[in-house]
Image (cartoon, rainbow, N blue to C red; front, side, top):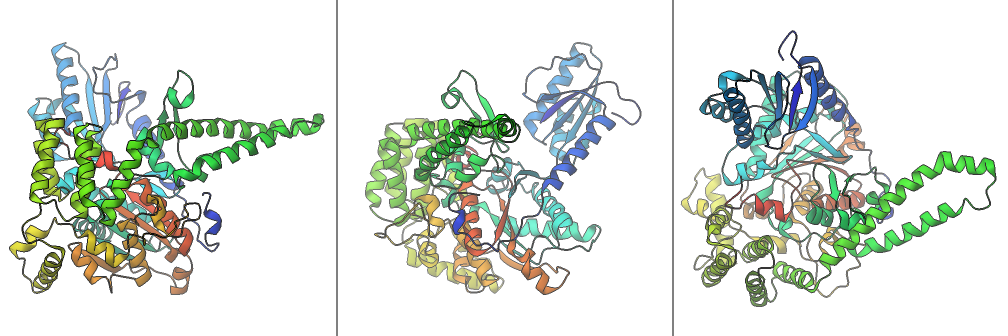
Length: 607
């Protein structure tokens, strides 16, 4: 978000190590640089031609020091930011300074923001506009709406105002790369986004073009909470967990750079070193980096014995690339060493063991004891909460005595103010107390009865009570989410998507996508969708062009839209699935998430 200081306005206002095993017939991804060019051109027109921008500043919610006679604010429609702008205006008025103020909301403006301006007494002093900027390509196969608030506001607060923005993002992709041949989805929000998109397509101009994307899959985050709560162990996921990747870039501090300066680095496929290790299990990363260092040294050593002409060619053609690769290699070695220090400690190994036991349903009492110790030692507030949620989700709720005991210990360790956090987690179905008689068999029979009642047009009281229950054990058994224990799992040559969690668990979200694509719909998955509370759909998109053409090319390009955020581990799993099955996956998400971001969004003190 930016504050734009403008002069007076005239006129109208103001790839990877295991890629070798992939199929060679995978299709090419669409060129998403078009989205970047569109956004850039729109922004240049908006700022330079319409508002004659002089200087650009990032919004930091601090007092503004400027002599310009107009301030233009380009912001997300967030109440906190609008209140800050109101304070800026009121301070200027109190100081007798006359300025013009323009607020440009992106991707759209909301009535709530205008109501705040009115409450603060500045509604008449500012003019409001909106810029329909929906999509930010983070990489060749990742596009983000950069709406981290979508998760809390939609799934906890029931505020559906962002549904239209998600539908608008899908409409933009459809207009540039569609039409789509099939649209699949699961989740209440997914259904609403699909309907919003269809309405916008029908209202807009219809274009006939060759489709570049065949299938679309919409999935709600609350369909699978287990996956984002598991510790990430692929390189990109670990970098996100420890250093927090923001908008595709990360800031490495002195502990990584081995200097007194921090460096901001873009993490995408343009970084050759990163591109080859991003999807790798961390246990494979150091071996690759050491081999890369040896290869670089060999390339440098070629200089010896060169004549003048050869040296000139080497300097002009290779040296710059080698130096860039050397710099990036040094950074990733530094980052890996930093990760090693934090993730190879005994505490982390025990934590991973506990997670795997919870996923497999083994030694649950020992897991409860470990969680108690974790809470009482105050190792990490978020990690303690994460383990509690994993215990609840995998065991279909906590036993009443465990729930009361663990909750009391957590509040004693981290503060009574987290009472509201527990209320939020209970509302989301993340941390709940088992009700008497709620065994897995009883729960399954209830779910089956509810689905039958639903088809008869009835919505029972029991359905509402079951809406937020987890059926992980039954889902895991039917979808084979937990590989057989006792079998050796070679992380250097993974055999399935479980490698992203050290061979312990196949992510539910990605398994659903795999199954639906295999079956060309939800047929045969009725039991699964019952346990996931339904809202699944499969619709033909009515793509034009010959059927053979669609099947040969675009049908194997699959756009997956995560509503509520997705993790880098899920993206790595989908890339693996694509290599194995000859698909190319494009991930569109409301924001990149991880266990920390997801739980922080549900804390009682979240802004």
